[in-house]
Image (cartoon, rainbow, N blue to C red; front, side, top):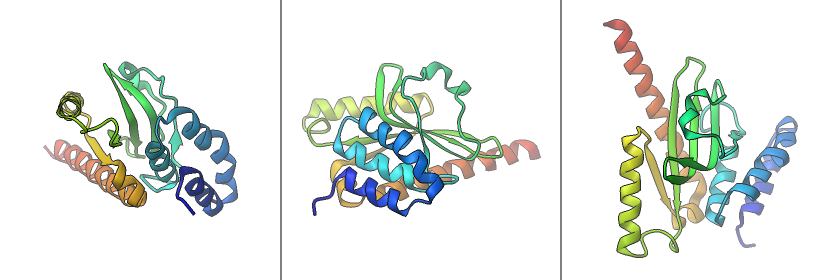
Length: 184
């Protein structure tokens, strides 16, 4: 059987508890079908939605039309992740913007990019564009995590584990900085 985002979605919903299944078709599946541009994005979104990125799965799939300039007003989860596919940030549209919220008020943003061979690093110009884009996003304080299409197809769960490790390190760093500030 060939792997597809639909087969992975079916497996994840079968594993989900009954109360989570109610949200799956309305929120997650429609988010996948309506907002993702490529098969690798769809596959990664399924895995992110059903994984414990932070807090309890499934994570929220949010509307990408929320204005970047107002992100601080976003109703982010108190202890979870809002996944915003195709989020517009300045002149760029990113594959995923993750808004991570914690009970103790830490808010972290992470950009996740899926690089299919057709659109990324096929030519020097494409590679240069992606590198400049990463630098511009990082100037805004947004870390950028890039995964190749091969990585996502081979093991999307490993990609999600890498994202989770980054989120955990980022939240831990923010908490440590907050504590240092309080101690001074």
